[in-house]
Length: 223
Image (cartoon, rainbow, N blue to C red; front, side, top):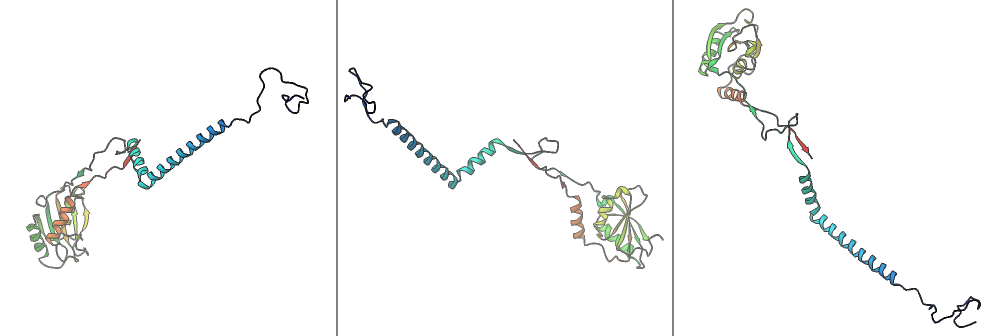
Protein backbone atom coordinates (compact mmCIF):
# COMPACT_ATOMS: atom_id res chain seq x y z
CA UNK A 1 0.00 0.00 0.00
CA UNK A 2 1.34 3.40 -0.95
CA UNK A 3 1.85 6.14 1.58
CA UNK A 4 -0.62 8.26 -0.41
CA UNK A 5 -3.37 5.70 -0.14
CA UNK A 6 -5.91 6.69 2.54
CA UNK A 7 -6.13 4.27 5.40
CA UNK A 8 -8.93 1.73 5.24
CA UNK A 9 -8.99 1.49 1.46
CA UNK A 10 -6.92 -1.64 1.57
CA UNK A 11 -4.86 -0.57 -1.35
CA UNK A 12 -7.87 -0.80 -3.62
CA UNK A 13 -7.66 2.84 -4.63
CA UNK A 14 -4.57 4.81 -5.39
CA UNK A 15 -4.14 8.53 -5.66
CA UNK A 16 -2.44 9.53 -8.82
CA UNK A 17 -1.53 12.82 -10.29
CA UNK A 18 0.09 15.97 -8.98
CA UNK A 19 -2.88 17.04 -6.76
CA UNK A 20 -4.16 15.17 -3.76
CA UNK A 21 -6.43 16.03 -0.82
CA UNK A 22 -4.84 17.28 2.32
CA UNK A 23 -6.23 15.86 5.53
CA UNK A 24 -6.74 18.94 7.81
CA UNK A 25 -9.06 19.69 10.70
CA UNK A 26 -12.37 21.57 9.87
CA UNK A 27 -12.05 25.28 10.02
CA UNK A 28 -13.73 27.05 12.96
CA UNK A 29 -14.47 30.40 11.27
CA UNK A 30 -18.25 29.85 11.24
CA UNK A 31 -18.26 29.06 14.94
CA UNK A 32 -16.26 32.19 15.64
CA UNK A 33 -18.68 34.37 13.62
CA UNK A 34 -21.70 32.93 15.45
CA UNK A 35 -20.02 33.54 18.78
CA UNK A 36 -19.35 37.20 17.93
CA UNK A 37 -22.93 37.78 16.72
CA UNK A 38 -24.39 36.18 19.86
CA UNK A 39 -22.17 38.35 22.07
CA UNK A 40 -23.27 41.54 20.29
CA UNK A 41 -26.94 40.56 20.61
CA UNK A 42 -26.49 39.90 24.34
CA UNK A 43 -24.86 43.31 24.85
CA UNK A 44 -27.70 45.02 22.96
CA UNK A 45 -30.41 43.28 25.00
CA UNK A 46 -28.63 44.18 28.23
CA UNK A 47 -28.48 47.85 27.25
CA UNK A 48 -32.16 47.94 26.23
CA UNK A 49 -33.17 46.36 29.53
CA UNK A 50 -31.13 48.95 31.44
CA UNK A 51 -32.89 51.80 29.63
CA UNK A 52 -36.29 50.33 30.44
CA UNK A 53 -35.43 50.14 34.14
CA UNK A 54 -34.29 53.78 34.07
CA UNK A 55 -37.58 54.85 32.49
CA UNK A 56 -39.61 52.95 35.09
CA UNK A 57 -37.81 54.43 38.10
CA UNK A 58 -37.69 57.99 36.72
CA UNK A 59 -41.35 58.06 35.62
CA UNK A 60 -40.55 58.43 31.95
CA UNK A 61 -42.99 55.67 31.08
CA UNK A 62 -45.87 57.43 32.85
CA UNK A 63 -45.14 60.71 31.08
CA UNK A 64 -45.01 58.98 27.73
CA UNK A 65 -48.28 57.18 28.42
CA UNK A 66 -49.93 60.44 29.49
CA UNK A 67 -48.66 62.20 26.39
CA UNK A 68 -49.93 59.39 24.21
CA UNK A 69 -53.35 59.42 25.85
CA UNK A 70 -53.57 63.19 25.44
CA UNK A 71 -52.69 62.93 21.77
CA UNK A 72 -55.06 60.05 21.08
CA UNK A 73 -58.14 61.02 23.09
CA UNK A 74 -59.80 64.29 24.07
CA UNK A 75 -62.35 64.74 26.84
CA UNK A 76 -65.10 67.20 25.99
CA UNK A 77 -68.33 67.93 27.90
CA UNK A 78 -71.24 66.96 25.71
CA UNK A 79 -74.98 67.10 26.05
CA UNK A 80 -77.22 64.07 25.75
CA UNK A 81 -77.63 64.67 22.02
CA UNK A 82 -73.86 64.61 21.54
CA UNK A 83 -73.25 68.30 20.83
CA UNK A 84 -70.68 70.28 22.77
CA UNK A 85 -71.99 71.84 25.98
CA UNK A 86 -71.25 75.37 27.14
CA UNK A 87 -68.09 75.62 29.26
CA UNK A 88 -69.97 76.83 32.33
CA UNK A 89 -73.47 75.96 33.59
CA UNK A 90 -76.18 78.52 32.99
CA UNK A 91 -78.35 79.79 35.83
CA UNK A 92 -82.09 80.36 35.75
CA UNK A 93 -83.45 83.02 38.09
CA UNK A 94 -86.83 82.46 39.71
CA UNK A 95 -89.45 85.08 38.86
CA UNK A 96 -91.28 85.87 42.11
CA UNK A 97 -93.54 88.82 42.81
CA UNK A 98 -92.20 91.57 45.04
CA UNK A 99 -93.88 91.99 48.46
CA UNK A 100 -95.20 95.35 47.29
CA UNK A 101 -97.25 93.54 44.61
CA UNK A 102 -98.82 91.04 47.03
CA UNK A 103 -102.02 91.84 48.90
CA UNK A 104 -102.37 90.02 52.22
CA UNK A 105 -105.74 89.63 53.97
CA UNK A 106 -105.02 89.04 57.67
CA UNK A 107 -107.76 87.03 59.39
CA UNK A 108 -107.81 85.99 63.05
CA UNK A 109 -109.06 82.46 63.81
CA UNK A 110 -108.14 82.63 67.53
CA UNK A 111 -109.74 84.15 70.61
CA UNK A 112 -106.94 86.68 71.03
CA UNK A 113 -108.23 90.18 70.42
CA UNK A 114 -106.27 92.53 68.17
CA UNK A 115 -103.95 89.83 66.80
CA UNK A 116 -104.98 90.38 63.18
CA UNK A 117 -104.31 94.16 63.28
CA UNK A 118 -100.98 93.73 65.05
CA UNK A 119 -99.82 91.19 62.44
CA UNK A 120 -101.09 93.31 59.55
CA UNK A 121 -99.19 96.36 60.78
CA UNK A 122 -95.95 94.37 60.92
CA UNK A 123 -96.45 92.98 57.40
CA UNK A 124 -97.10 96.49 56.12
CA UNK A 125 -93.76 97.63 57.57
CA UNK A 126 -92.09 94.84 55.61
CA UNK A 127 -93.49 96.06 52.31
CA UNK A 128 -96.66 93.98 51.83
CA UNK A 129 -99.97 95.44 50.80
CA UNK A 130 -102.69 94.90 53.37
CA UNK A 131 -106.25 94.06 52.36
CA UNK A 132 -108.98 92.92 54.74
CA UNK A 133 -108.18 92.71 58.45
CA UNK A 134 -110.60 90.97 60.82
CA UNK A 135 -111.93 87.65 62.04
CA UNK A 136 -111.72 84.43 60.06
CA UNK A 137 -114.79 82.87 58.45
CA UNK A 138 -116.70 80.02 60.12
CA UNK A 139 -114.80 77.54 57.98
CA UNK A 140 -111.57 78.43 59.82
CA UNK A 141 -112.66 80.21 63.02
CA UNK A 142 -111.09 78.37 65.99
CA UNK A 143 -110.27 75.43 63.67
CA UNK A 144 -106.64 76.19 62.83
CA UNK A 145 -104.35 74.46 65.30
CA UNK A 146 -101.05 75.42 63.67
CA UNK A 147 -99.44 78.84 63.39
CA UNK A 148 -101.44 79.85 60.31
CA UNK A 149 -103.00 78.82 56.99
CA UNK A 150 -102.09 80.63 53.78
CA UNK A 151 -104.79 80.57 51.09
CA UNK A 152 -104.23 81.58 47.50
CA UNK A 153 -104.95 80.76 43.88
CA UNK A 154 -103.36 77.74 42.23
CA UNK A 155 -101.26 80.16 40.21
CA UNK A 156 -99.86 81.52 43.50
CA UNK A 157 -98.21 78.20 44.31
CA UNK A 158 -94.45 78.72 44.23
CA UNK A 159 -95.03 82.46 43.83
CA UNK A 160 -97.04 84.76 46.13
CA UNK A 161 -97.79 81.98 48.62
CA UNK A 162 -94.09 81.16 48.94
CA UNK A 163 -93.18 84.82 49.38
CA UNK A 164 -95.66 85.32 52.24
CA UNK A 165 -94.55 82.07 53.83
CA UNK A 166 -91.05 83.49 54.32
CA UNK A 167 -92.64 85.67 57.02
CA UNK A 168 -94.19 82.67 58.77
CA UNK A 169 -92.27 79.43 57.91
CA UNK A 170 -94.63 77.11 59.78
CA UNK A 171 -97.74 78.19 57.89
CA UNK A 172 -99.76 75.61 55.94
CA UNK A 173 -100.26 76.30 52.22
CA UNK A 174 -103.66 75.77 50.62
CA UNK A 175 -105.28 76.81 47.35
CA UNK A 176 -108.84 77.80 46.52
CA UNK A 177 -110.89 78.86 43.51
CA UNK A 178 -109.77 82.49 43.38
CA UNK A 179 -108.06 83.70 40.21
CA UNK A 180 -105.96 86.60 41.46
CA UNK A 181 -102.46 85.19 41.87
CA UNK A 182 -101.14 88.11 43.95
CA UNK A 183 -103.77 87.92 46.73
CA UNK A 184 -103.16 85.75 49.79
CA UNK A 185 -105.26 85.13 52.93
CA UNK A 186 -103.26 84.76 56.13
CA UNK A 187 -105.49 82.94 58.63
CA UNK A 188 -103.85 83.09 62.07
CA UNK A 189 -104.17 79.87 64.10
CA UNK A 190 -103.91 79.04 67.80
CA UNK A 191 -100.27 77.98 67.41
CA UNK A 192 -99.22 81.45 66.25
CA UNK A 193 -96.73 83.34 68.41
CA UNK A 194 -95.23 85.92 66.06
CA UNK A 195 -93.92 86.45 62.57
CA UNK A 196 -90.38 85.39 61.75
CA UNK A 197 -87.68 87.89 62.53
CA UNK A 198 -87.33 90.34 59.69
CA UNK A 199 -83.67 89.42 59.11
CA UNK A 200 -84.54 85.71 58.87
CA UNK A 201 -87.47 86.45 56.58
CA UNK A 202 -85.22 88.50 54.29
CA UNK A 203 -82.70 85.63 54.09
CA UNK A 204 -85.46 83.17 53.23
CA UNK A 205 -86.79 85.51 50.54
CA UNK A 206 -83.30 85.96 49.07
CA UNK A 207 -82.86 82.18 48.95
CA UNK A 208 -86.10 81.89 46.97
CA UNK A 209 -85.00 84.40 44.36
CA UNK A 210 -81.46 83.07 43.90
CA UNK A 211 -80.79 81.55 40.46
CA UNK A 212 -80.82 77.79 40.17
CA UNK A 213 -77.73 76.50 38.26
CA UNK A 214 -78.35 74.13 35.39
CA UNK A 215 -76.63 70.75 36.00
CA UNK A 216 -73.31 70.44 34.17
CA UNK A 217 -73.35 67.70 31.54
CA UNK A 218 -71.07 64.75 32.18
CA UNK A 219 -67.84 64.68 30.21
CA UNK A 220 -67.56 62.04 27.50
CA UNK A 221 -64.22 60.90 26.13
CA UNK A 222 -63.94 60.88 22.35
CA UNK A 223 -61.12 59.05 20.60
